[in-house]
Length: 272
Length: 331
Image (cartoon, rainbow over all chains, first blue to last red; front, side, top):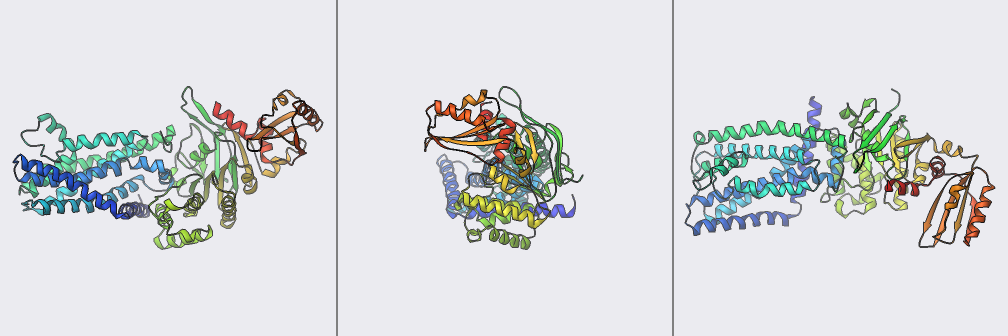
């Protein structure tokens, strides 16, 4: 790709990012709802753990889980199903006719989604820590940030791949996103650690296929249990592998689905 | 290659419920630089399929198409750098953003610098007379203004070839007229601006197009300037009669010799039927009038009319657009 072409695609990615941030924050009442509701959900789990006298660090696990869940929901609803929605409102046609890489659009969506969600997730995180006075034992903040950003990279790469696969979907896109919401929430251990003794081995095995599991466990170890990079290096490698595999897969899937759509005439077919 | 757009024996087959459906059947057309070219046909004739192939959204099953000398199937990226597509009845963009914000976003898909994009947006909004709505959210714009916004989006990159798919669909008469005038003016102003327009409005094609291809059931039936197409009907007689019942039966003309084709429009509101028939000889019309009198129908008017593009269509397929659409939907 030539320099001009790269700049052009970066402009397109930035524009898509800008739309997402502008659109996502124009109506502040949504911002409030997206912070208040998750805090209520977190509270329910924290109260439950307090009632059963679970170890005190479980409250921290829940807060980190709830924070990261915001990113997974964003990946599912605002990344994976996005091309489907764009098709329904007539935007996909415009994207496909424009002389840009479709990956630029996906990148813009991912970055915009990340910024929007980071605003909400930070608010949830801070509110949770302050309300429940959760003790943090953070010795290596850089390691925590590294795991966090690797998790985000892997999640959004997964979102890009789903977006490509969902491009030709009709209503199934909605159902598939729904189907992925709860099981991933359960398997990745959003509100409890899947590495604990009580979780069956099969669940532990399945959960290891999800980048969110590594991210959550790694961040919890570093931020709540005070562990360091020597304890979480496997997490870091696993997340880096996820990114390296998922990004090219997303690109391949996008190209394959676009060609299939052009052959079958399904790229701009709506209300399926 | 001297033509800016050229298709060579394009065939497009879709999977149907029972059997494959041939949407385009060996379509070969060319468009010269600076031309406004119309693709005229009833709904389901294959117009949108052809425009989707030319805008790289769909692959042909057979044949090849070129835009600016580039193959739409093998060099899609190069084709995309010189085209734009505006579809009527569509409002791409984001409802939560204002009109100018939406245009800025789309300008970035074509790599315009922010300053030139802003100047272009301002110019287009002024030209298309909706600059007062620049800061209005797209979701709050009326259908007419949304379509102006859609057209402005299509012109942001100053395309070499502008594809317009039913651009005035669902618009009121005044807005349609303004948009048509603007498109013609744009093509003239740009000199090299080429337009491919699909429409099922005869007057639109007649008023705007340098040349028109008449398409029906995936086949190009005729292609020439509107004037020359109509001149081919000079030897025929086109008669129009209006009768006072919506239930008037004109099926008797099917068996009459010298009837080239006909179309009818029924109005439930006024309980009238308007019937247009194309004849090889004027005297056949008196036989038709006799048959109508036998049905005890009140003749409200009867006169010879000038040929229109619809008459060209009738002369080619033996029926009007409405009958064509009915037949298409039934199949």
